[in-house]
Length: 371
Ligand SMILES: *Cc1c(COP(=O)(O)O)cnc(C)c1O
Image (tube, rainbow, N blue to C red; front, side, top):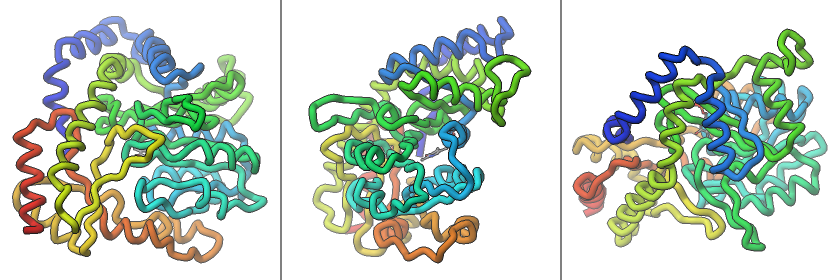
């Protein structure tokens, strides 16, 4: 599904030197590499503050802690996402309210969010799934009308651009109050271990996020808040600094692979190739097809026999997961789009090192199934 070894081979000298430098200088925690990465990412994203942390799940948790929500407050999330999005909400004693997604982009929309708003709703966590932005302008407007926090889960879409109706462009994650991202190795900007970050333009909020991530202190041994311990270590920051310079090239390589797949599958009526939202670029964290004839699992087995790996993101709607069925206050209605997607999506290998030979082999394999 991903080829991190070939990607490393091309950066080996630079990465080895940067990692050794951290070890030789023994600046493992909060060293210069972390500050440098923070500044470089702020510049890349066009945001005032980046607050690094230990992983993407922590980023979401710290963001919701800094928002000062109270137990029982409702937070709206899509049901078609990775568990982390809802997990941190439940963990904080908040109530995840799951909504359906758009069948074309797999993302939540302002309409779906607005239908779920109650007097207890305090925040919404739109997820920029598979590498493209939610349609954020109407989401931000709805949130403003209802006085809600907008915490973007941008773990899968770092580097994508969203265009507002007036032509203004912003990086995904830099649109809501707080953006959260993950540097898990297979993410578009991946470390060689765990890592994450939050970003915001709000000075006061940035200070609070930094405080929560650091045991609730802004002065050593004076704890104003109950916080957590969540840091990006210097070795990971040094690696991310090198990979950040290539992030746009990596996105271009993913887009080229996606384009190849699109053309290869254009004539297969049983498949729906990924649709692009007109307001967002797509950085293809995943290339996800919909199998329309109900034979998704058969296709997966067929490809597996040919040595072609595929993944199902996600096989079960969040509201049907055992842990979340229990945490929901009311019996949930089924969400029809999420339900159908869980039964029909399949993701193909997608990474920065796919060459023509591999793309041909994979797409011929897929086409062979439908012949
Ligand atoms: C990967 C991911 C996360 C969590 O990131 P970790 O760094 O693994 O904690 C959260 N949300 C989404 C949508 C993700 O894909």
